Image (cartoon, rainbow, N blue to C red; front, side, top):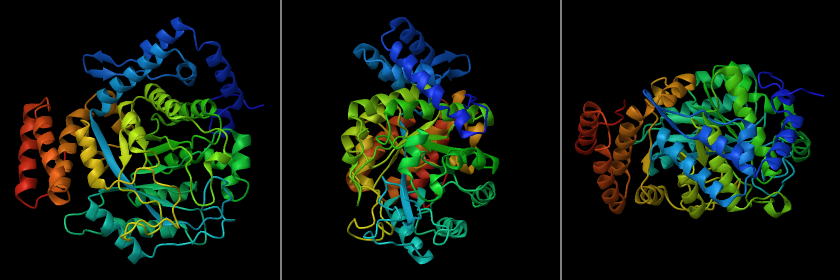
Length: 482
């Protein structure tokens, strides 16, 4: 029997089944233990120090107790603390990005994904470099600066050389005032050597969803193909970091397995990365299984309600306070609106989940990986965020200034990230408004920027930001950053 060890590099030791089962028993036994719950909540609260605000985070056991707790006033307290943590470290900024699907060729048999190899009626498509160029121009014309590239696992059709060529093409395209400044990569688990190649290509975050941490379920959900290898998949982040990638992003597909099990496994994975590499996940995504070609979410009997989904999000924020949290257009406007208050710091906007979807005038559905619930344009999403008190940010400064991995986390932990993130967000928002926004969005945006400039605490930084914003408005100068 494997023994739990967060510092181990073996999947079944750092994501240990017996430890999760024991954690779930402990959480169930203590879900009404008010004294313990209050102690955990006190530990999670942001604490003011002489150098800023700090958060201790929570262990997987502590966080699991909060997730199991069903006392209404304690749940409200969890939500309140989640919002406090989000504002302390990320302010009211929300980073925007879009997924870019390169290819839906795949050799895996994943039963929850329409790209699985046995699906013979979905059209298979792989973008040429010219088609990549057209997609990127379409995304730049929307105003995007940050992409997450996606591709099925297929050594013949989607080898690492193809992915690297696409990254090079994406970074090379400068259309009007557009530029993709950060490419995050969501591709299958690979080798240390290939991760080194991705690092050399200048990627931002390497993202890989675990789908489920429950090994028995994992093997059933991935019956065929290279993804069937649970250990190889689960240990991918360690190989990525060995390959020099500073920022990695975790996530499970909620609805495949019992959510309390997945939650504990997710927090344990974050603890493992911190224990071994000295830095936890740069991002955690919270997707739920959705309808897609050949996939009916009702076939999976572990689906979760919006209320449970909100609670999961808030508890992740308490447990891993410094991580970026991502919600995609899988979720509706109403759900996304609630989760923004509970810890989410990144959202996609104007997304199309089909291969070659952005260059098409009408949204194509025949090659979509999943149904998009929030089908608003990027302009509509930007305006909605601002009308709800958020600053839409297109900032990529930390990545390009070398503030990644432990360097980013140390800045975040001592609160210094706020001194550059807030003005950077306002400057990149100005770029968006000047170059891409509708008149209605411009009106809302410029008024927001004027108000938010006054909140920059350092007078010198405030005046530099104000001057840079004036230059963006009145000249063709772009890409200022602190």
